Image 1 (tube, rainbow, N blue to C red):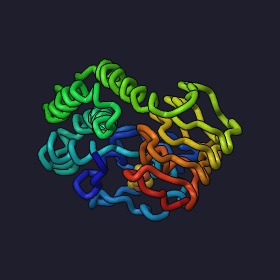
Image 2: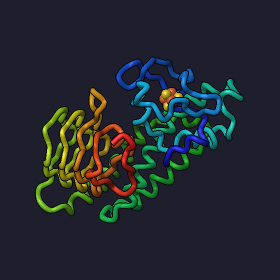
Image 3: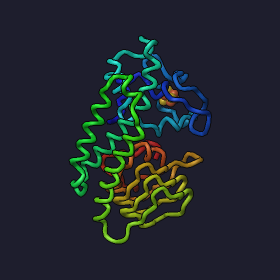
Length: 266
Ligand code: SF4
């Protein structure tokens, strides 16, 4: 479930639309290749994305959907070679990305020992999702992804509660909270629920976020510096993705879960 751009036909740079903003220097519609995409499907400005006005590209993660669509759904035939199937490929990609995102979360939940009571259901869900990702293009675009998200999220929520129940003391519940610009420097958020919380431009410097559930939390910032995680402790943080980290601001003192890496711009 990690992006393998060498085996992808640059799908995130073609299939998706983006609007000129602080995230992207230009606008482009879905299905049109980005002008920076090279013939070999690599980005011509990969090492200068932030400097060239494309920081939005650095916080996108396909969770491995790109290579699945390129190599499995379409058997290694790219959209330049087969323009007749290009539209179908571009429609499948955003659906596949959501399926792979769910696979990522379900896999993480299976690694959480305290969540053992829901592991059997998670394994069943994982097998079902994996099967769906291997269906033909027409079947994939017809999937009710929202329903699938709801089913998997129920299991993820239970897994989260089982893990966080082991954290001593009162656990804060900021699920879906508007914490834009909140001053949470040094806050005790151990085992807190920050599911879907708006933490845009929040100051979380030095905060204790051990075992906090950060699924879907927005850690961006309008001025692109990102929520401040400098010196924060994210040991055991649940359902935190690399894309969320890439959008935030941290430093050498930020403690990360082992599966994630320190963004190059920190
Ligand atoms: S700038 Fe590079 S990474 Fe971003 S969409 Fe264009 S080709 Fe892709």
